Image (cartoon, rainbow, N blue to C red; front, top):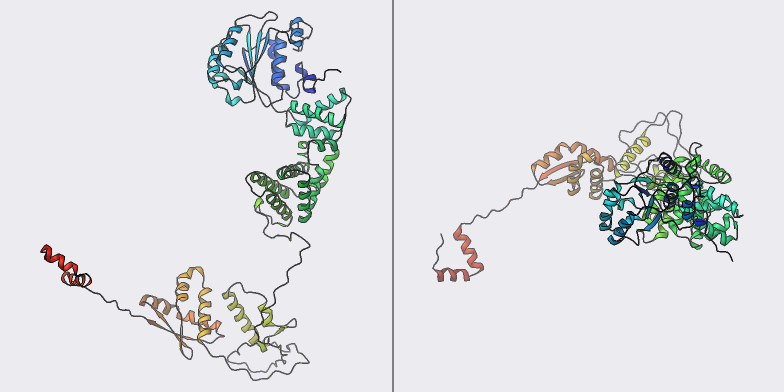
Length: 607
């Protein structure tokens, strides 16, 4: 059985041309080799698995190559290249700073630097994970790094540049490696699949590239894992099954439910996802990514930002055409807020469900830019819930007024000097129900508004009918009598209600008057006369100035009965007791006779 070599080692680049997605850095290194302008120290930094150590090895092999090619690549034929490829070169050293981070290790390195190379022009030291060196080791390395021998070149590699001392950084040429794009990873995996005769789907490789997060080494490891699982047949369905990735079909369905306001189906879909073993944060992150893909596919200018196959792109374009960009902005914001609060939330499922409900309500929301606050007008969440019927009016035992048909009012009917009081029998019939019952079904916004409607009703009912006009008649009703009921007398209860109602409907700028009226209770004396009692003359002057306005306002609530207000001032006398010292002492002695004994014992006198 042959020894199996993983793809990350088997297809590791050995020339600058085969390095993936680091074109600018490899070009710079090749030009430096061709021009002979080599620095004595380099620092390669960047994320894991992007080619730092690989480029350091290729660079070390190239500068020691005895016959490099015209384009700055190693020949792989000379003794130096062969010894390096066979891992027996004494001119290129690789050190792991994670396990060799003490001062003694650096001192041993400084001793080796003095020895010139056996083959080639340079002795190259590749120190990986250099940020793991201790503070003392860094200090011991400073002098050698600043002034090494002419044949020594140091290449430092790290994933955490911020942990390296500034004195070390200032002595190196720094090369920043970037993450590898998904498109480059997919292309590299496709080339390896062709060489290994592996059947692969583009979407399957896209999922692997997405999971690798810009790391080529992780992508190659996942590729080997999926090849073993699928036995050389990399399909999208098998890859998402093995990697435990949510299918994009879930998100297409979820988006359809959201734009249709179907909250119940969206919650059931989330429950289905939880049943498959996925966490809520995975689901909400995928929803945010799906909304982002819809957003970029909705505009032809940003369409190249989408990383997917042409068939999948068409589906995104079709769904994006149904959704306005403003909706997608708010949806992404809601998903992002949910993701931020997921770790600290105690009820994580409820948090995700609340976000789904808010997403469903975005379709019927207003046009404000509040985003995460949700719409002002909410659409019913569950369609199967029956609308609650209005609660029937409480039966007080009194028989509701019966509508009575009105006789036509003739044009020559004399006008009445005083408007007749409004009664339930004289209120007009609207849509087959009395005006009084119709008004009871709608609560007034304020008591002041109730008075305004009462005043308007009085004017409308007592206005003369136009010539030739007639009121609706009911053939089954008895004709109305011409005699009007007697005017209701003013009572203490109606007076207090009208007084309080007028105080409550005063504007905010007259709050002082309203507050005083609320603490004063008017007292009905006789007839239409009532009195109020105030504490001082200043308050009495205030009410005298507003007397006409107050009485008119109260009259509206009393059915246009004009009352008369009288103001009285309470004269409270405060008894002032002025005692001299002798009187005060006598009072103390009455309370405590022991004080007198103490005075006599000490032979004290009152001053």
